[in-house]
Length: 94
Image (cartoon, rainbow, N blue to C red; front, side):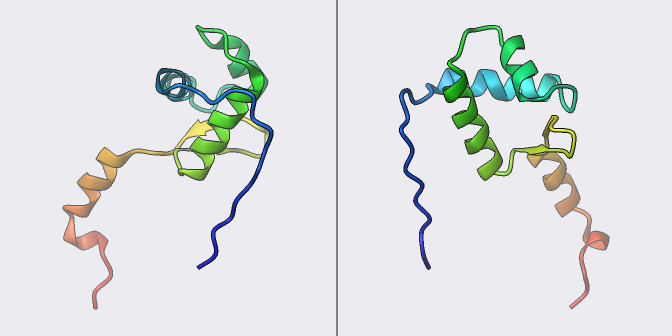
């Protein structure tokens, strides 16, 4: 299996509290804002390059999606997955 490595000139890596802040904002404004609008709306100043790096991480990890209009949406709901796993009628029969 090949690993994909992308080398970028990254000036600043985000701290965990910054990533969590962005996650919280995306969950709060689910599907309302495009990247730039959400970046302006953040409660704490973040470099735009760092903000885009956080979005890349969240896209790669499957927590957010971007629709055809460019709006950010939160798609990671582990608690609903756990609830659905409990229902045997939602699985294919073998």
